[in-house]
Amino acid sequence: MVYEPGANIALSQTSETFVAKLDESLLTGLPPFSRLNREQIREILDHATSRRYDEGTTIFREGHDAERFYLLLDGYLRVVRTTPGGDQIIVLHIAPGQLFGIAPALQRDTYPASAIAAAESIALSWPVRLWADFTASYEGFATESYKTLGTRLGQIQETLTEMATQAVEKRVASAVLRLVNQSGRKTGEGIEIAFPVTRQNISDMTGTTLHTVSRLLSAWEKSGIVRSTRKHVVVTDPHRLVLLSDV
Amino acid sequence: MVYEPGANIALSQTSETFVAKLDESLLTGLPPFSRLNREQIREILDHATSRRYDEGTTIFREGHDAERFYLLLDGYLRVVRTTPGGDQIIVLHIAPGQLFGIAPALQRDTYPASAIAAAESIALSWPVRLWADFTASYEGFATESYKTLGTRLGQIQETLTEMATQAVEKRVASAVLRLVNQSGRKTGEGIEIAFPVTRQNISDMTGTTLHTVSRLLSAWEKSGIVRSTRKHVVVTDPHRLVLLSDV
DNA sequence: CGCATTCTTGACCCACTTCAAGTCACGTGG
DNA sequence: CCACGTGACTTGAAGTGGGTCAAGAATGCG
Image (tube, rainbow over all chains, first blue to last red; front, side, top):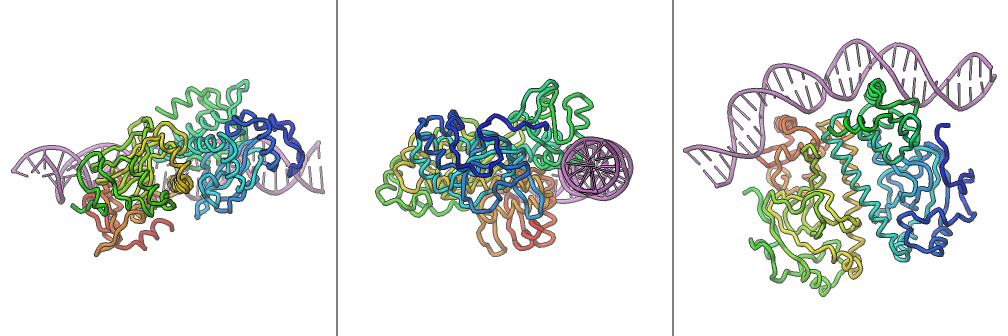
């Protein structure tokens, strides 16, 4: 019970699909909706489906028909690609407040990767046919969505160059820092990654083996940079980790 | 003189910036413009600047202000990212008929990578402020542009997974096949990559060293899969190369 | 013809992977 | 509440892919 469900109390129930009214405050302030008035947000929510996903649940699968697009309200997701050979790699993570599964924005009719709940999560979703309506009717929705996409493309390119040019230790250091930056929360000992992460997960982010990750974390723990337990990592000395990542 | 300038005779002159009228046939049939009538294409061309780039010329640089967006008419480009440490990797290639430098589509104000002419090339360009006009005025322009972006995002993810999971020989085989697929032309001996490629270039695509690429090409040449000379590769047995790439 | 790039090839070596054999943590069910 | 089973983690030992170092040969441009 290291992980606690999070902020959106209104939704922290166990029902699978919500018909009940969603609170407008859920979307207020999120970039894609920031320029909309109360009424427009109401419309959007009235078309939305809300659903809870247990840790480990697949939300949609690579290659499947893109039928819906999503907004993560609470929790964390892994976006994963699997090779024909069965190896898988984690392309990026999704944090609360972000759109995902926005294949329609790129005129795709299948999802390019799978989305898996890294922790218990809650997401809204809409059928893709509404995408055109949203972008046409809501000022700023398209703009902000494409901005998200741009950021994500940048991130992936970043990961790609890193993968191609850096040694394993740097890649793992960067990966851990990325996790901390997008989901870190302060604790007594340092900054902790807010959802369960295994050595295997980290190796899937960095194209190495769980063994190597384990050895690195052990070494870092000995020199006081991190503290880690099962499925859980706390960075106690972020500065030294940054040094390792970009020397 | 292995490389010959290509099809667009109207533009194969050496002048730097064209003011002369561009022929409408240049854009007819290209996806982003396919649904437009003659008059609309005329408008678009009247706002375009045309320019020739020698092999090796940088068209725009990573991190610089995105002031224009481009369409490649003839030639080939490398899209390159450089690390702080000075290593560079080739993210993808651009073939004739494709839009590039379309940062504005993703609401970016700087280019996320550099574009370099891999061979003598000719491109049209427009100031970014016209992007909004184009997407608003021209049916299908936005749609097709985002489709391009979607394809490109897919390609990069593909490369990323490959980088993270495959051994060097497979990565190099895939890279060569990718080049052949998007710029191959038949010759007596097999399919040849239509622009100059060095061992170093291939290693920049695959995150390895020019030495390793050289050894691989030598080995493949001995077993009759490729023939290669300075800056030039011909695949004589594509099938065997596919086998190497995806066992 | 000379010089700069590109390419080749051998020899060495080490960072990682692979293989193997555990230990540890935690949830489940008797 | 304890025993059991499974998934997560650790750590040694051995092997190797491919990077690094080094030297030279080919190619083609000015």
